Length: 158
Image 1 (cartoon, one colour):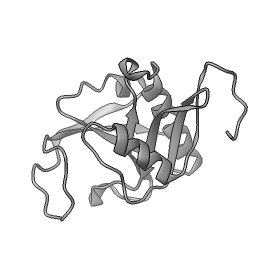
Image 2: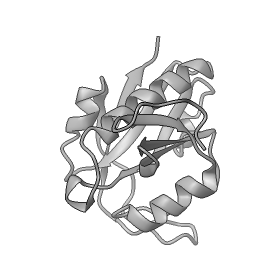
Image 3: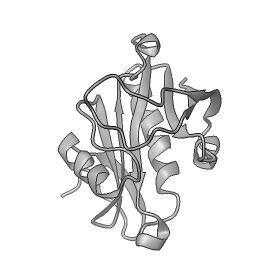
């Protein structure tokens, strides 16, 4: 059962628990796995079907963790070829910005692989902030699926 009444055949976003979002990420994300913690997670639904999720939390980069910045740690949706719907990512990025503003954050950031264009982020009002950031090797025990450098995107929230 959903928190809000929605008309049939429309995309809508509402909060989901982390275990639901992580299960979706585990099944559908191309190069990242589940996250350990979050501030909030959102699901995008088409009728009763979950077609995308966003998980937002503290910035992974310690120097960006200033208390007023939140990071979209994972965003994942089915492609239209996989029975997904168009505009799911845009809808989720917009909802992340709205929720972040309600929680008192003034900036939201996220990352894409250098090989990704960032079209949805540009459409959602994000600007490219830094290119080719991150490491290609990791010092921790966690295994990372991608060793490609990333681009950082940001958006101020008013």
